Image (cartoon, rainbow, N blue to C red; front, top):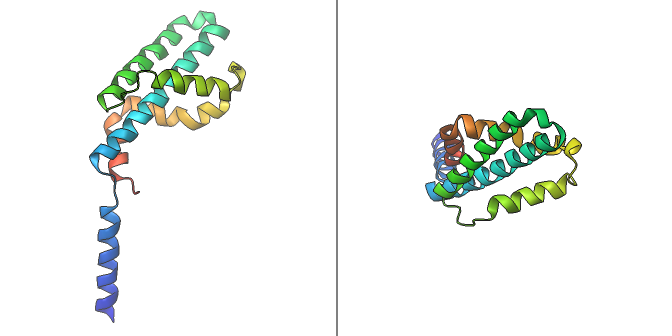
Length: 132
């Protein structure tokens, strides 16, 4: 009986391990993350420029991060040249173009995007180890 349980456990462990994302799937997820984070940083930069003109340097830093992420999205296989613009438009609609309503976007993207910028290899590892 214990052999059967052991064998079933082993089969379950191996099946779970096999369900991890393959590299092309992980790259697609990374491209999507890069697009969404590029859009997020652009939205933040737009809001800074609109509401806090003295924070011009910070807004430019966010724009620089956004451009870098857009380039990384292309490296990961994003072929839609308008992907960031489309994502940004969706985010602007979500907050109704009200920069005082950024909380939902920050809640959703702040940590993911910070991690993507600071530790992109860790984010790729996350997707490679993620289960379907």
